Image (cartoon, rainbow, N blue to C red; front, side):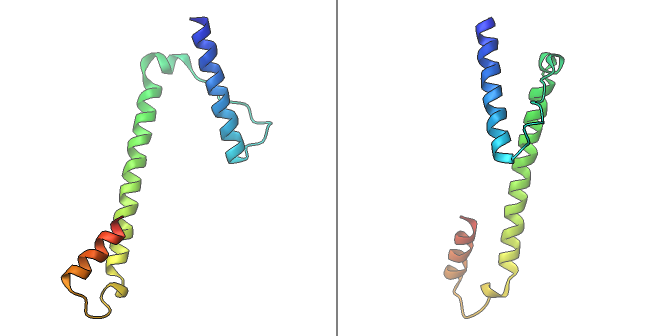
Length: 95
């Protein structure tokens, strides 16, 4: 069991180091501590799941807003476009 705890700590330390490098966090900032009580009751897992769901919702909302802006732009209506060309343009925007 001690070995597994040590492995988990090594993985978390590696993640923290990578995060510090990517976000340019100064070395003076300590690694955040995990609270065993939160892990015991599953609060930490529930929190991560909630954040993941909200992030997915935000990404979807941003895509819809982008499509609305593109669809509303005059560029889409310029020229004589056939329904096929309009559908093709929509599929291009969605991908």
